[in-house]
Length: 261
Image 1: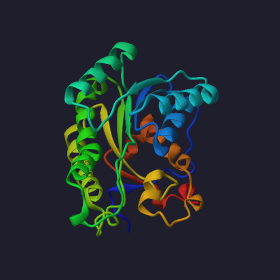
Image 2: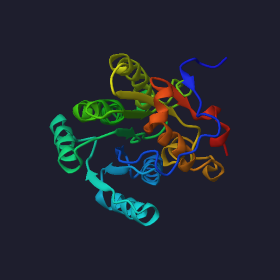
Image 3: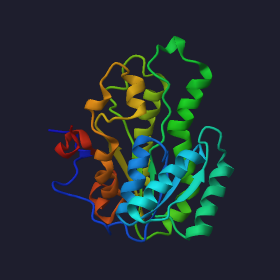
Image 4: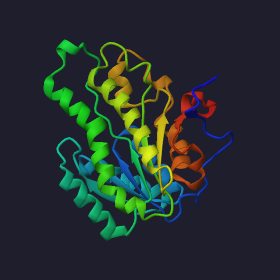
């Protein structure tokens, strides 16, 4: 039997064009492979995506894609997770409230990973940077946005995990530590919020054609892997009202035939 905390995408489930209608969704790390897929999928499902990333130009490119493919006007919010302070997150949340008056979901798709290396070789500043971007920044951002999310009738927050059995091995360093700590944080957050309007979710994707994957497995033929678009329906599912069935669970796409190459 599988882990009881892990669930699969319901068989045959696909995102309908209006299942996220009237929702505003913050996509953190929107310029990355999974973030871009999340933003496009959310827009196709009727949501207004807010694109958060370090640099404006890549966000503008995705903004244009969303406008051309979905006819939706997204929003752009440049923010560097590495250097952002708690006050920066509070200002971001205030800006979302002024512009939209609501926030119905967050997809934490940003990640920092410098590559596999032994502990003795890790640069101390990169250790701190990795822990911050992958663990502390998502928490601080969520904390700032919680009042807005709590005002929604139904809100969802999605964190992206990695295979914890894999990243506990040698050379995964601060990234592996951060992902294990993130799994613990999700459990705590779910217990604190399980009876309120804010749902906590975890997504465990299969190996995907992303920059992070190429950094870890540079000898691998990444073209043989599915694109991040394969996870798009799962992200929309968790953002939608249907995702309540997976509240507090890990949506494990490795077990989903629809997300295999």
